Image 1: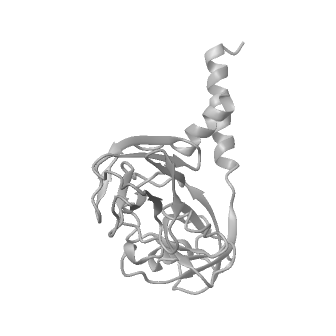
Image 2: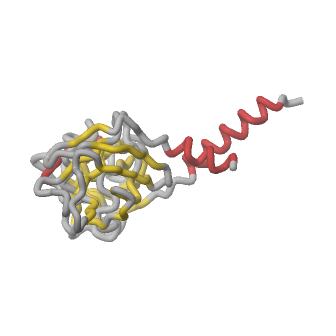
Image 3: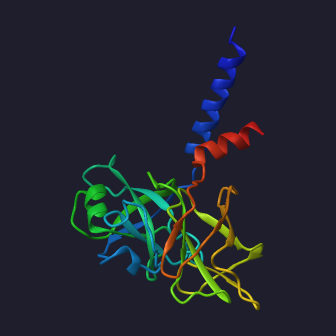
Length: 238
């Protein structure tokens, strides 16, 4: 007879495996390009994962999601018959947009392209999925240059997962066109020394705090979202 604790453990393991295997995969063309620095990408990230300077990628226009996928990580592998190692894969951080790329395409750093294909830059078929970012530390809230109490643009960075929304001082924000920032406006002028910020992830988890924000700088929340597998296990238990 299987004990109650063993049965629960099996359920937890099954839920975890289901969460991992059910992740959506995308297929398209993999190409390569050179980005001088992470902040030069269309996302304009003020802080990035430690892998980003080498393992960066530009996302196709159709999946760009109005900057909504900025900062997310993806695991990519080559499925082209010309690739030398079909088991090779790499994790990249989305820091840029590829306007000419079609749905499923990724424009990769030369290092990542070489790792997964074994060849010099060309156009090869790839397969990828969004994954949790590796070792991101804790989430940071960055304030865009030019921000003030009347027009406040913040950027959440170093998140393990994608960001769904941000509220500032109990006010919903809107996305800034052309760069990855969430903007709130105030007719009376918000106190930037004590801004109440709520960050909601794509998994509907939240990080809350009151922060002193300085234009051009990032402040550490000292918090991080749970990883995706834990979120899915929790949903299955409910």
